[in-house]
Length: 164
Image (cartoon, rainbow, N blue to C red; front, side, top):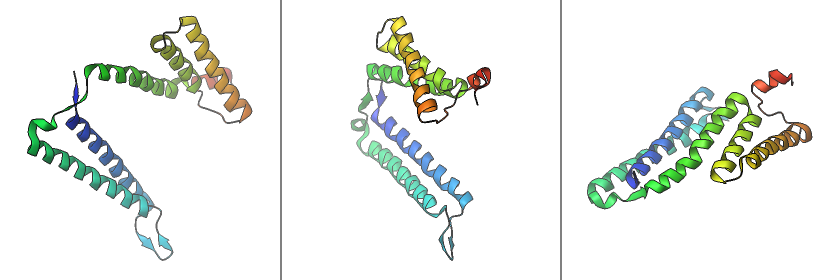
């Protein structure tokens, strides 16, 4: 399996168009007009969103026109199969970390993520990986909760231990 450059260019144009559309439509709630005292809060985000959207559409159109004009010359490979595998080995644990951190809290999520990454990718002994994950979670707690007094998301642990 490999990913071609044209596909990545179209994906990037689609993602940035989505961001521009989100910015433009989100700013409509704030007002995009002009008042006697100046622009409403959504004025600049609306137009920046429109510029990003238009640039993304132009980028996609340019990519498709170049494909039509140059044909197979434009079909160069962006990522080989091995590169896709390496990228997935980094991205998938990170995506799982985000889901676990939202559901179980940052401390559990970071401990599990660091354990897995140290064990599978860093080739640490499982016991060392456990201590690394737990040590980081404890350090995270001490630094944020104790030193800076900034509570982080704890998920169900907050209720279980009666914290806050």
